[in-house]
Amino acid sequence: MRKSNYLVNCKQNHPTMENEVRHNPEAARFEIEIDGQFAYAEYVICDDCVAITHTFVPRQLRGRRLAERVVEAAIEFAKKTKKKLSPVCPYVQTYVERYKPDIEVVAPIEPSTCKIS
Image (cartoon, rainbow, N blue to C red; front, side):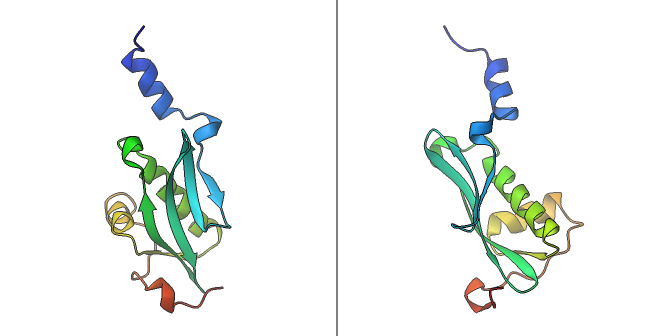
């Protein structure tokens, strides 16, 4: 029996605990695991900013807005830690320009040159 589009859409739009965004500080990333694969946004914490350096979504998981969800988690993390955002990753730069123009950002930095706090 084929699942209805409604049920498929509900599962994508209302994630279960198994695919909630998790903060993985040891790997310095926000991640979602689905079927043993990870979508994630990596970051570096500098003196006064959180630099989001890279996002990745496996090909099989694309089209589910997972990159958006992990980036949103990273943005919230920057807000909660009272740090500015440095959108190094091109996806994050575009996302912030389109959907978060009110966020205080600093110019994208080279993570290897910043002083890690």
